[in-house]
Amino acid sequence: MLYAIISEDIPNSLEKRKIARPAHLARLQQLNDEGKLLLAGPHPSIDNSDPGDAGFSGSLVVAEFASLKEAQSWADTDPYVAAGIYAKVIVKPFKKVLP
Image (cartoon, rainbow, N blue to C red; front, top):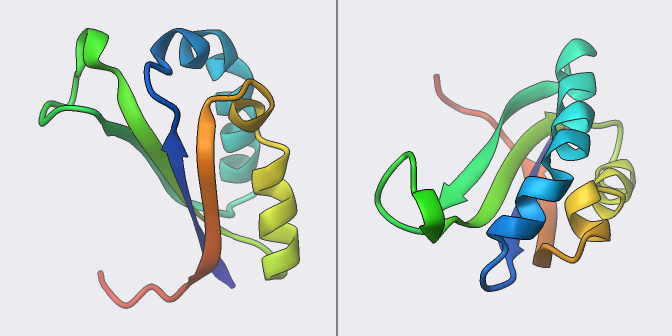
């Protein structure tokens, strides 16, 4: 089943994001290589795809996991969590309807 992992950053997270980003992306790449990743990306803090120093306010990952427990475990071990970037992470089932 698909699960949405919706994460909210702490204020001024950009510098911490830059440090933890390679490890964060490696985990996402592994999901992608396994054919389990539907989409992933950050939420810019401003209305611009390249927010520059404004940084990001959070992230969204939609991926396939065997269970909610597995999805939650994966989210809990994200390098951004370990680095203290995320203030809040919500994991919930997701049903793709379109496209």
